[in-house]
Image 1: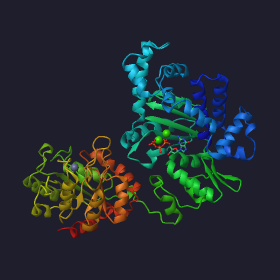
Image 2 (image 1 turned 180 degrees about the vertical axis):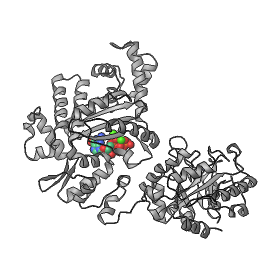
Image 3 (image 1 turned 90 degrees about the vertical axis):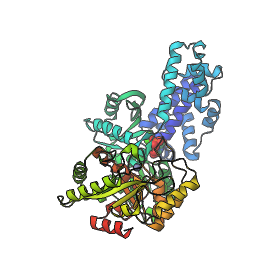
Image 4 (image 1 turned 90 degrees about the horizontal axis):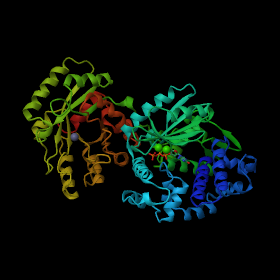
Length: 571
Ligand code: DGT
Ligand code: CA
Ligand code: CA
Ligand code: ZN
């Protein structure tokens, strides 16, 4: 139980008391105590242990007893009782702008106790007939409900990244902000994020909060406290800001990076050692240690540094304990991109432009893998056009130093598992990516057979976007991915981690599973424009979340070793 958690429970109690129409003095006392605890730079656990709770202004004996119960048992009977009287949905109603405790009482009195019932009543224009609610409020409520639904959705990592750049840049420009970092699922590189969590080190929290809620990209202020604030941005995504004293930055940054599961496991482990971890630091033998960096934070609890992408409670703490954390692949390890489209099919750029953009990113090679003839809508290449492209690539390569374009194809996997080019054609190429672009809805057995044939084809180097999912828009094929992973390990075929932020295919969990089986991966952008070469970042995060190391990823190989790998494999 952290200070923040106690605050959240107290705030909820205050809300329920208001809805139930209890004496306003009571709810005000809970709100006040929550505010005091939130800005108290001292851990409630310590206050309880030292019997000093009642010294805190605003906390009398009744509230102190409640805090003691919460902190020592993790529960509060009074709170559990209250929750029975006001369903979760009813509390959610309070988050709709213009809806206060009084209005909610009216709803409850008229048997509107869920958000669904509320929405239906508003749509049917029944709400406006209730006492104190007019047409205007009814419209506001409908609008508020829609905004709430938007808030609950998850956002692509690419959207989050754009917003973090914007918000982070703004905060970094504030005089009073000594340091600005992103935390939460964004920092862990999850494929989607629920909201953004930003952390600022500052000696002047009110100044930072005031500028934050006043920023040009703020659409709505949801909550504004002394040390934290929540806003909805103009992009729709919610941003939570936490301001912390510079000395506490590392502990707090770790805390708000999460994940919750990681934090819970870490605290439990600390408890077994007789230590305590909170956003305020590490308590060992009555002494509170405030590490200056996250590296030091882990060191203090006897663990090697766990990168944010691994903090999911997927066994990283045990691995760190045994000194067996993998050395994750890094952006600097990537030597090229093996799946890119040119103007010849549905890409935007010429071969020269692609090569130049790849060199600008420090790459040593780039595989041009345009679509094959069956994908007519992409202007897929015929054998004839592919041969001409190969000749142009050879011509260009004679001029490059320390860089090579690889002649490739993204050959279409036909509905029966045959490929769109014959083996003779494929054998003349440097890199063969094989992908499904049609007949996604086949049953599992058919799909399994289709993929098995491709994996067993010695000319195929990489399976492109293996599950075909589009995040939030299209489900993966009904394919048995576990089987594909096993076959890929057996045949030595690489599987793609498609870095397109709409795809991230394979995903983190499958990468992890594949690595345990010995599968090798290619982190590819599938770029159709030179700018998308930068999507590599998202693929890298996904690979790291799957615990991939450099040797698990073929496009970390130097050119000569990659060529050996491509030849050993097939031709
Ligand atoms: P998301 O936003 O759903 O993609 O996932 P997260 O992991 O960013 O979760 P979020 O935004 O609810 O909270 C950020 C991190 O803060 C979370 O990973 C764990 C940490 N945390 C620890 N204790 C608390 C707490 O009492 N309240 C909140 N809100 N966060 C906490
Ligand atoms: Ca978050
Ligand atoms: Ca959050
Ligand atoms: Zn494709």
